[in-house]
Length: 329
Length: 239
Image (cartoon, rainbow over all chains, first blue to last red):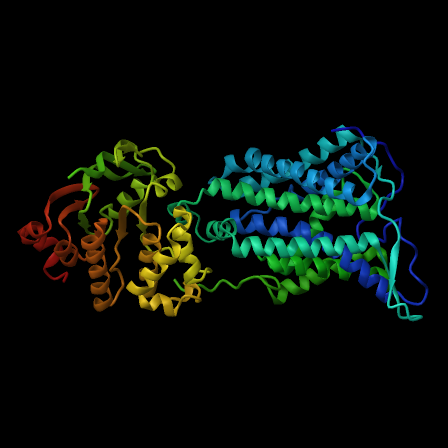
């Protein structure tokens, strides 16, 4: 990878990004809501990758958070590369970054599956899990060695914002970055839901999920379908990476771990294996964190998120939208 | 008649246990061939071995002049061999319609509308249940769906594993008559594995008897039906 310059600031997931104006003194509810939805969108996009892979191969891809991190780095690199060749028109640059980063990150996702998981398919259940943890550590170290351990900044690309409902005291400031993040997330989720429910690929994916051998008996190339699932998950993670980059303005090699754990939590909360569950879970985790930070303390926001997860799992062991295992045989 | 499918000295193992011990079977174009035998004789294994799972350790499997012994399962399916497997294996969380679409995928949906209408004409029950999830169908309906799904791929060779298992006699009879009709009208080649030896042999042109992973007898369907050994082992009392 291209070596990037450093930055000293240390942001963290769930905290208001450094580029954002301080919330107006008249209330924390509306800013927290907006921040929560934005953050939840990013979690949701990553969570889809966990949930799809779990659905089709029955394993937790622990390297997925790090694929997200790679996506963020690749976005930054493409941004800087575009700037250096003189493409400064922001919408065009964003679009190019989006597609190039998606393609390159998808390649990473494909490679991870091909190298670390496929050879272990059919061996005992824990083997791919251990391999995934190894892959996660490898990707982190790879980014650290090639890019260094410090934060890498991106100068604010998308600036400004809008005040909605401008009546005094009832308005809310939404930055353009937040608008882009939420709209893009909605568009991607609609697109992916349609792909999974309507297309031949989506049907093949669901067939592999339900009965891999029968899918093969009907001519479905199971290996290819699984590869494409990893590719789709990685592409979504790279979009989340780009969003993170725009929102927080910095990346480092470690962002994948925290984001990965949170998104995994979101997937479990929503019901692992369920696509709408991942989206709702992501949104919930984002909202819980920001509201907790707004009303109680930033330090305990993760405690709040994970406590809610525990409580939900006690009463709904398969998550909010997870399917209870009743099948007529 | 030329052999559409032929197995020569095929062996297959589960771990170190031999499930097939040198099986020779031939199915010619336009025939209904049945394989009968007791539980655990290796009938279903033979069906799956043709599709490469478990893979044949020795011997050769030739389909339409092409050696498919080492061909991956999904590629075999694309050669227009369709199977309604043991246990039916309906996709439980897909609708009946989607299950049928899965069958049609290998044809690139070239004749989808026409074939769908045909399936609904053969099995009107499936039309009523089109939007219902596969897992909620009754056993008989699932069996119809499994056969219809296999037929949606426009196979040259249809392999049916115990289509009458667990069905009411009337439904089983209906399924056998559908098979007969498809064979007579469309010249569909059928390879049928059955425990219900009487119906299977009556329907089939030729039959094989399998005992402990070996073919012990073969001949015309009626001819096998008359043999005292077959009658004693598979018919009397089992009817």
